[in-house]
Length: 353
Image (tube, rainbow, N blue to C red):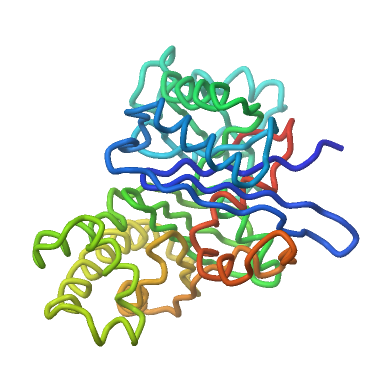
C-alpha cells in the first residue's frame, strides 16, 4: 500500500503543509506548518510569481523536514469547472469513451485546453441514469503548479479540487455525521470561498465564490487608514475579547459589514442550489479556512442559513504528536488546515477527482 502524501495547500496568502502517519491507534499528525505569501503572488489560483512560490515551499520543507516526498495539491478558481451531469447507465469502459464528448457540452473551455476527470456517484433519480461529477481544469494552470513542485524538489502525485479536499477532511474528522443528512462545507480562503453541499457523503453542489478573508483586510485598511499588516492583525484578533478592548473605533462595524456581504454572496449560491432540490434540508454549516474564526462571519452565516454553524476541526479524530508539534499552534490554525489535511489523506495512485 502506498504511503500517505504530504498535503500541500498552495493558497493566495499562504502555503500549508500537513503530514500524517497511520497506525493501530489511527491517524497521527506529525507535520503541520504555514508559510505566508505577499499579496499578488497568487491571484485567482494563477501563479503570478513562480520563483517566490518555490522559495516559500523550500522554507516550509526545511522547517518541517519534509525532504523529497510525494505530495498532493489542490486547485481551484475560474480555471477549474466542476459539474454534476447525468448519463445513461453503461459500462465503465463506455463511460470513459463517452466522457470527452459529454464534457464539451458542459465546460466553457476548448477541449484541448483542459484536463478532464470524473467520478461516478451513487445512481439517483431516473432509472437507467448515472450521476457523474465532471471536473475540467486548464492544462496550463496545472502545468504551472506541477513545475513549481518539481522546482521545489517534490514529487506531485495527486491533483485534487480544493472543495473535495475539504470534504475528505470532514469525513475523516466527523465520521459520525458525514453520512447523516445534508451539510454545507464552506472553506473561506483569502480570495476564494469553496462551497460544497454534501448529502449522506455524496457531493451534490460545488462552487468557488470570489469572496474571502482579503475582503476584511482591504476594508479595514481603507476605512481605518492602517497598513496592510496592521489590517491583517486587526482582522485576526477582532474576535479576541482582550484585543477588542484596544481595537480602533469602527473596527466592529467594518467586520460586521464585510461579514454580512461575504455570507450573503455565499449563502445565495447555497440557496440557489437548495431551491432546485426541494427534498433536501440543510442541517448544519461547517466553516473552515483562515477567516473561519471571525465570530461576526459565523454569526452572519447562522442568521442567513437559519442552521447551526460550526468551525470545522480537521484534526478532531487525529492524534497530535506533541513531541514534534506545538499543540497550541495546531489548535489555533486547525481550521486553516482543512484543505491540506484532506490532501494528506490521499495516496499515490488515487483517482484525482
